[in-house]
Amino acid sequence: MTRIYKILTHAEWTAAQAAGTFAGSGIDLADGYIHLSTGLQAAETARRYFKDIADLVVLEVETEGLSQAVRWEPSRGGDLFPHLYAPLPVSEVAAVREAPLGPDGVPVLGDLA
Image 1 (cartoon, one colour):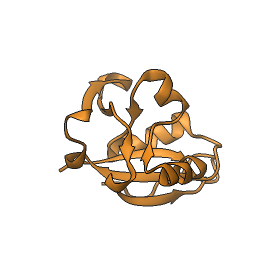
Image 2: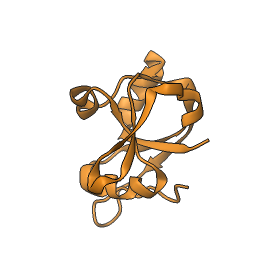
Image 3: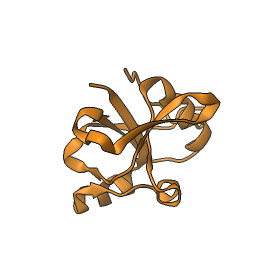
Image 4: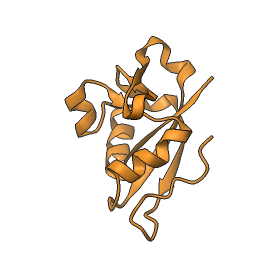
């Protein structure tokens, strides 16, 4: 099992809970898949794409329940990133963390394994 992470707004998470699935944020919908990160990649993702965005949460998801919908594809710096080519069922979210902004405007993600 591999744990992967999705950073999104609290409003997006609330809407996903109501719908039972998360179809993706704007960039996900434009690209045709849900962008996810490993624990090692999440901090840089937060710094690059979520700086100064308040009210964020981080979803923790195990890849095992997502079957063949997760593809590991090269992205930033050639690293393989997990991309989900299907909506994310809320039932597959193992945990949800708040991600407050640090003094530098970058979301604080805590310890992601």
